[in-house]
Length: 189
Length: 145
Image (tube, rainbow over all chains, first blue to last red; front, side, top):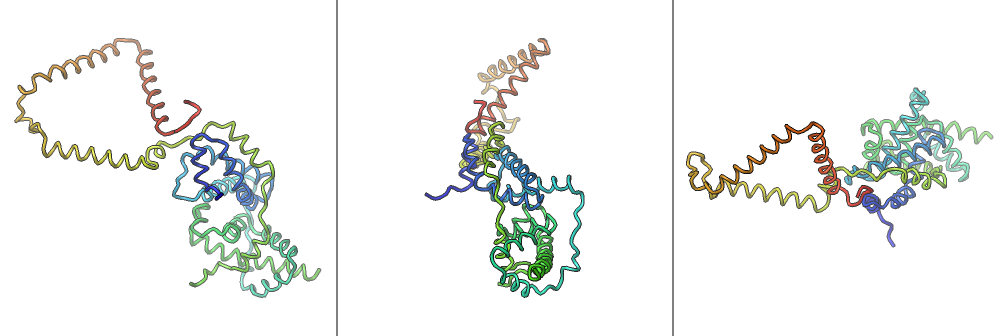
């Protein structure tokens, strides 16, 4: 049997079948949680934020516009909740120095990283991603991990499309800079 | 097609290898517990009225009303110029309107003479009935019905 799409479950919930909402939660909980975790960097906070986002989604399901994707709407709520939670905790985040993040031999770094075994690669990437400022981490995850387009990221974050492109470009460079440093440590060890 | 400058297939592959963090096992149960304690989601009025086949019914009804008005203006059986109206022709229906207007004015006079709580009570009842009617139009099921 073909899996039902999100709209099917949304209609069911609006018809009074509350249990149908569990299917939507089950389907999107991991991505919502992962997004909140990438922004907040804390599992407990991420769980609370993702749960709050789902309850908000449930409450305003009647206002959901069918012209946009359900995930875009959900991620926007998760994003907004995470950013406001983060601002309450950390009023300011120190950005990485952009001047250092230029002219790294990306192909060389890619080559060195790909020579590591699978587990080492995973650890290295996870550590590098954690070193990114939360918003950059979130942007790079939405674009590279979730395969969302720039216009979808624009809908979720409210950042302009040109700003997203510039930030993705810079973040990509920063990530290579971090990878270069971490990978050199691994090689030395 | 030229690749956007921020795109990077190698990096995409590497990032995907880092894996997605999974939500805790009991996540869905916790969300559903919160949801069960919440009222039924609110359906917006516009969604109920302008969704699915309703849009076509609204378009058809609007077109019918416009056509009727145009018809009346063009081929009205009654001369719409007040100077040409022969009021004698309508002598029979005038008393009906007169009695309607009289009964309305009597009702309003009664309301103004009666107590303030009665007026408020009638107002609240009318608003309540309008609210129920709109809810019934916009929701197929609700804990209220």
